[in-house]
Length: 360
Image (cartoon, rainbow, N blue to C red; front, side, top):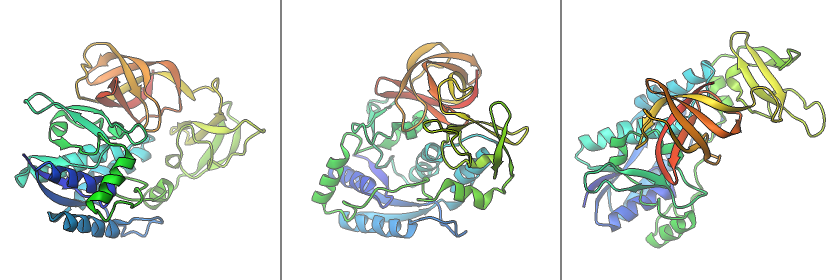
């Protein structure tokens, strides 16, 4: 049996994770990661105080030690600054993916190891296989196809997966709530959290507006016709259909964002249809590679998931430089954008991830 620090977030999933690990005979301590406090009055719901109270209540029911681990400075440096810099540079960063690698299984895991723990447990819907005999542990999709979170874990390093525990990964969400009721956990029927990792249900546009100054410019069509003014390129996403301020030209056809031209500070819109230049792409350069079994030094075929709420698509992968590969999808993909994460899969096993850099 192991000594495990469970990241109690105040939600039902992490609450049951702690209960299950305790039931399995492990020595369990609950740890609330204090990462963000909305001291700048950004509009939205940042429920950290309620989450902290709920996490403590769960620990009390389970009879386990409870700690508050202050990681605010680390979170600002590793997640908030990364996110703001990315948007200012014209990419679309994914704070949820990097939050897992840099925070939950980064500084929080470092804290756990320093305190004598052997592993960190979370409520992620993912499965960890192997690793008990000294071989590298594998990351697999969670059993619940509607809740699978392996995409958000795909940038983890091998040594982080080796130290991770995902007790609810074999369960459906309905089972999680049912088992939580049986354990008498006060979070059994608590609604799932929404929004940015640890920040809460805050609109990204409101968050960016608070920290990044507006830089207005022209909204133009793909043939250069000026259609209006934008507030700043960082506030828009490729493929965005609403909120860009350009009315649809006719029924059934919408304008979408197809490009952000930082050289001219122009937001380019086009029709939401397959033949619109730049909207659908097939071949990309991928960097910042992270392997969980993938050999990026040689060509291979696999499934690639380009965003969380999308299917994994067949693609070919080939090395093109140091820590760089090209990927070629069998079918063109809509509105892929630099900065997004793509996860590599061999069936249900996640074998690594990378970051979209540019169209090839």
